[in-house]
Length: 329
Image (tube, rainbow, N blue to C red; front, side, top):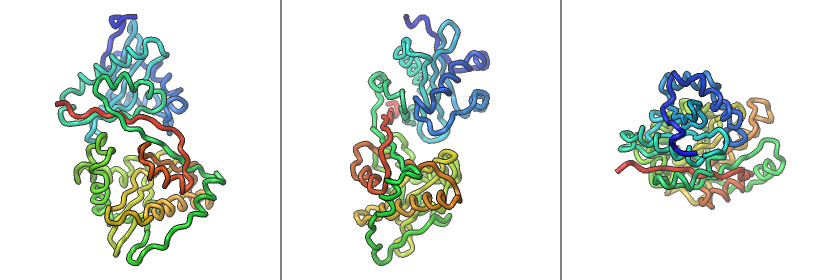
């Protein structure tokens, strides 16, 4: 089938009804094939988000019927976030992906002068890696690890962890709003030169990092858990954090772990994570809040972090390529 059989355009009101089929096909596969933690928006909710310009959707039509689409946002962060590419069936899939990406790049040309594109290629989307690399995308491998509630092996590992006594002047506590400015500085210092800053450039500046922390503690990225979030204090000043939130009804997440360079190498990460995970386990056992799991994400080549999470009881679940495209020259 040739390119001439297809049309690519932004989803508009004239296509809302006929788009429902391909969107619901994606919804039926979101968890099984795309590794979504939560069920995606219902169709009417998705259309409402499009109408309110919270996100944009590029559709590919075959004989006037949408058979593929791409969803992206430009206003949530300092990156253009390519959220999803989905095709109905596998016929001409690579050609459809190419046409959707070309239209997406054309539509975002102005924004790309100052923003990177970030694209987590979850689930089936990982098969597009070679094809979108032709557009200049680069990739970072990310691993998702899970600590499952009720898993006897993981809970035994956590319970039997041997932690060194904290040196004089150090202590671990929960999060307090008064720590926010220090949290911004700690996260910025720890992440500004990492791979994370390649696809989320907010880490490169203090103000960008402040936006990330604000969205964590103000429940934008999920329900924030201040009692579960662990803070490392040195002489009563915060020098390390392990943030915690709920990204799904029963799924806890540790989105950020950071310790200032001068305080590393002393096992403090284990202390922070041990406190946070034990709090979640205890809450579940006591019925205070029910969790099915805790998950974390780290680079596939960050062997130190992978070993740390295994020592606490986490196990790798799956890996995916995090794609990014730097600003247009």
